[in-house]
Length: 222
Image (cartoon, rainbow, N blue to C red; front, side, top):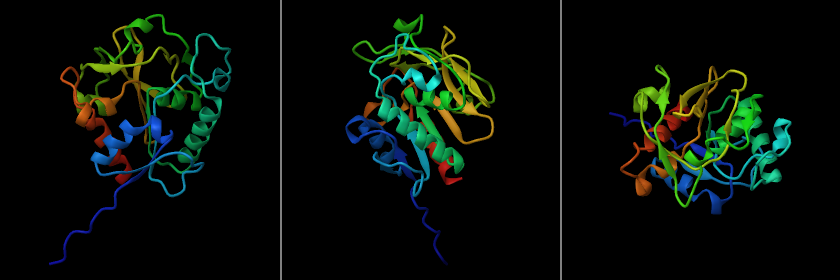
């Protein structure tokens, strides 16, 4: 009897440099994916895009003046945005994490709060902070983690209004958006860091971040 056909691993483009994305590479590699970093300028040859965390987005990309943004890399921002458009044109899955979620939002015309009034509850102060969250019933996050669960947090910015066809599916107690999803495209974003909640970074005060990463890989195989 013939054996089952072996499934090729998904090839992910992680839109950052190797020195800044090792945690992402480690997590996705542990789940069986092949990971690639910049430089790359198109979606050709890849199955999905990961927009990682990092500094703040250049405010000129969302038609705003700088009102508290910091650690900006305009060249990287524009490259990530071009890659995002390239993957969207092909209908390929995209996962944005922290800054990456915000990049997805501005790509679809949404806004950014450049310095959250409640930033002390969210920003990195020597380590990730932990806070509770609530998910929208019927969302993929609700099916993975339930209605309420804690997440790690390392940001001082957030999205304001969601972009076209994006919906907020998870929020912090202060109303800050913690996750978004597109209504028809395989595009997801989380404000927290699942790659720092799994495998060698697994922590007892949050759920397992690999559940989210595994869900995203299932979109690649679909």
